[in-house]
Image (cartoon, rainbow, N blue to C red; front, side, top):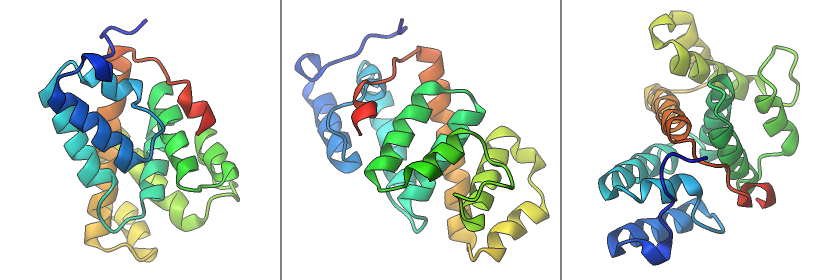
Length: 185
């Protein structure tokens, strides 16, 4: 049972409803997800979280599909069912094939053939960054450089990992229910 109520569009102030519409349009969702509705109880938290997501997830040079896979990988590592399902749905919206999504959801190993080395190394870096950033070393950064990532793209990986950790904390602490719409996406 969720710890916070879900604020539906009909009950939300205009400034919250405006963010709901923007989120739904920009993320290409068929409806407003529970995570967003739960944040609707606090306009400042909703606006701040949506602002971060817009800048980290939807902008930059790293493909959004890679960023969504980072969210899935970190959600798996942190055992956040909500974020895992939400961002797997985002991956499907973006055309990421089911084999790749399944491989990330089952954990990354060296023998996973569904994920190119480039993507797997980015995901492994992001997982380490989200789990123990103090353990990142020169070789971790060099692996990204070998795949052609520059400083801007590497910062995007780090920011996406941080955003994923932030989202998993909120989702888990609030006990938000996984949306049924994710199954149809």
